[in-house]
Amino acid sequence: MAVEAADTGPPTQGGCLCGGVSFAIMGELRSVSNCHCEPCRRFTGHHMAATAVAPPDIEFLAGDSLRWFESAPDVEYGFCSTCGASLFWRTSSRPGLLSICAGSLNPPTGLTTTVALFMNEHGDYHVADPVEEQLPGDRP
Image 1 (cartoon, helix red, strand yellow):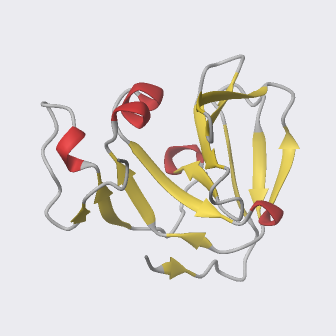
Image 2 (image 1 turned 180 degrees about the vertical axis):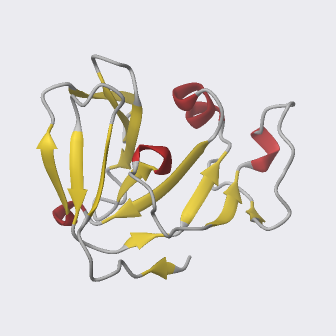
């Protein structure tokens, strides 16, 4: 997947609805992937539109309400315990990557959506975007 370079301006910032979790990203963000797997749909209420960054490249400016829910032995979703905002996804099988819900980023992000995953699990109300490359999921 393509990585889009961050501009030389201020770092990309983001956070939850109530401000209990806020962060700044110092590194490059990956292009956005839409994941339609059932766990991501249930976590976000639709599909997860996520970018990603290396964990050392994110700095938490506020994080007292950040909580992690372990949905499987090696998968966790991060959310705000105050407002309930969906914020992050991570897996122990890829410790060098922290997925960030793209909607939690302050615009303009300069990012584009390039791929859709697990389209075979998408909600029956969803219409696929023809510009997304549709890849099969990799769950067994």
